[in-house]
Length: 161
Image 1 (tube, rainbow, N blue to C red):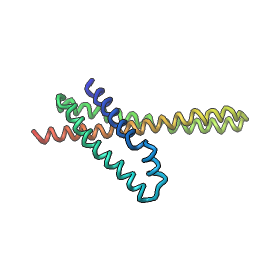
Image 2: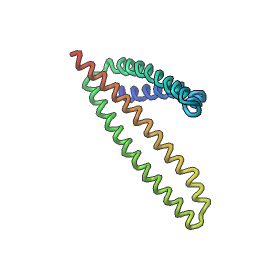
Image 3: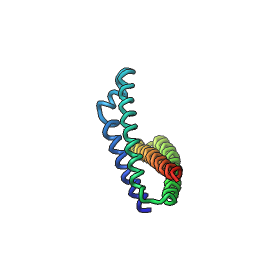
Image 4: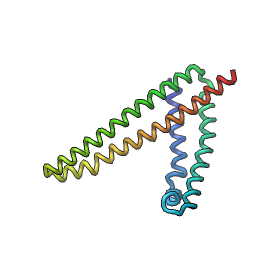
């Protein structure tokens, strides 16, 4: 399944590039958060237009990248990706449990008078757990998009035959 690893890697980097081009720019962030309704609507419209353009490019990319792969292998790849997404979802749910456990440790440290340790846990460990959860959510959405594109390629191939 080397083709799937390469496809996931290339698709991920292309998707990240698109997000960095407009979503994370200071001007767009300012427009989406601090401007009046018309300015916010325009900023989100720009994001939507960029996403639509990327969707067309992504489908063409996935289609051309998998042109030499059989439909059966594509179906296996979709199955493996869906399994991986479900695994990420279950791991993501464990992060909520870790965060709750850390919060209870913070409360315990405060009750025991170990304020410095509770500050360290709150300042360092909780943001790490939260950022990991955000990264996993982002990764799940990215892989779900890839599965959708692969499924569309499979459907088009089956309709052509």
